[in-house]
Image (tube, rainbow, N blue to C red):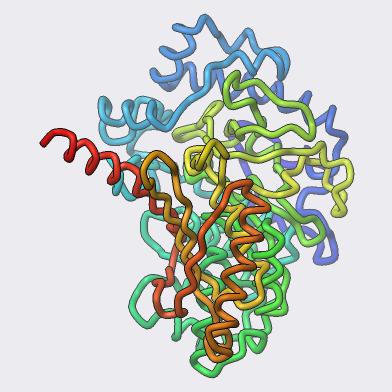
Length: 475
């Protein structure tokens, strides 16, 4: 395969022919069985490297009775114990700042990123200089598959700080020799300025989150700017579900008259575009020669069959700093063998992308509900304004689900009957899809704040109810 070595040694001057669909034709279109044979060999190399350089892995595998020499098949690899985010945080707490799974000297760390730490101890991502180059090559290859080419303007509309999405897109665009526009997001008034710059520069592509793209389109229209006039051919997203949900995808495509492509896994797994769609193929391809992905049963953590649903478990095949080996994501998806991929790439595929995190799922009256399912229903409703909140409460012994959704000005202009019809239709559609009754409250478009980053829409008030009840009982 092209540039298939460990550690990687990519040619910085390489560029495919402009009319080639593939960056690396052999790696992307080879017979799946041949690729799996190469992956098995690479897994052995990666595991030996980690065993020799990371006390974290050596200790973990010794305790499990696993040695890299034992891995001679993909089935053997399923016996390797998974890594959890909690273990990574513990490792860094005990071995500050990067944990004892860092496999390079600290002097070779080139970039430091991480989690925000808003819900506990932050996790630090230490990326070596050679890995930074590898990530750039990986991301550029996927972006080439999206149809992007040298000289294209790529507008990056996400926060530049700890968030790896912005930086991964930037270095991929630079390696692609595109015109990078790292505009950013998050400051007051920045969205209106983004609309102005998009209209001025007419980029080929926009990168951000789906919720921000909808917010941007809404802001542009309020400023008297038609989003279709940006001239975008492509919007590609990561950071949250949405780009593979048909109703959200079509809403964005209609707003911009441009194609939408889904991408992204986990910051720890950067190159995070290891799951990404292509110009011809919807959903998300699993670029298995960058990061080996298994979709596994959440309980047994062994692979499910094609068509099965489970949680992705990821293994770096080209990272030398902080390599992740069977990192369990906690997300939920289902996969196919990719034999029908329109682009001709022979990778497995997540046809509906990643639904969301398993721990984002909540139960109401015994039914499992994912926020992305509610997103999908609302985005199909004519009159939906583009933002909502999901509020779970408990009244007595029963859980109650309230969806507070905004509506466009035209709905309120038509009067109370139009608002009531929209509420009734929303309640009917939500109950049909979710299997439980949902109450809907319609509010004006300025009643729910928009976001410049990832949307946080679920509010669970059941714990508050329980605390109040216990307080009453203790009096």
